[in-house]
Amino acid sequence: EVQLVESGGGLVQPGGSLRLSCAASGFTFSSSWMGWVRQAPGKGLEWVANIRGDGSDKYYVGSVKGRFTISRDNAKNSLYLQMNSLRDEDTAVYYCTRDEAWGQGTMVTVSS
Amino acid sequence: DIQMTQSPSTLSASVGDRVTITCRASQSISSWLAWYQLKPGKAPKLLIYKASSLESGVPSRFSGSGSGTEFTLTISSLQPDDFATYYCQYYNNYFGPGTKVDIK
Image 1 (tube, rainbow over the protein chains, first blue to last red):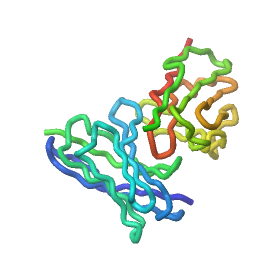
Image 2 (tube, rainbow over the protein chains, first blue to last red; image 1 turned 60 degrees about the vertical axis):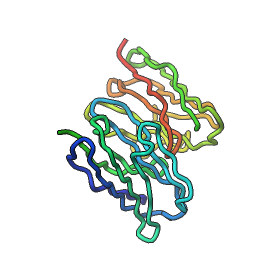
Image 3 (tube, one colour; image 1 turned 180 degrees about the horizontal axis):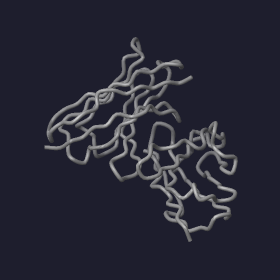
């Protein structure tokens, strides 16, 4: 059974940084595309970034390019999202995804 | 980038109606598509994966079809609990803009 467990969310001031982690199990992590999606309060679903199984390709939605970095450690079956220069509009629940499977989400609040 | 579109953006329907939502990809995505239901204050709910496979526990009135660039989500007989917003997603990638199903 695919299991994805996010951590690392919290309250951060505008301009600050946060690193999200996702611990994966139940599938062959190193050969799986992985992604991050988010849902802002009262808003719809937005894809944020994805990464190929070997880490060689990474893609981002335009609003986070240059600020967020997706990475992975296949030895640890872990996915990461480094978020820098955070803005109010980055406030959302962030979900780790592997195809149709999602974690439970971690809340990121950007506020002064 | 592969872009996803959905139609209609809003759909007004009555309980018991058959409802169909269409999702289109800007290029072929094979069957790598999921459908989600979103309600205010709740986590997204997976309905359909791999374009046509019904997620465990989801009522059989929901069905998905299509491959390549055109996909549909059908609710065979709309129930009160189904009034929500529906999103398609190309796996690990962009979502469609959503279709809100509201009461006629």
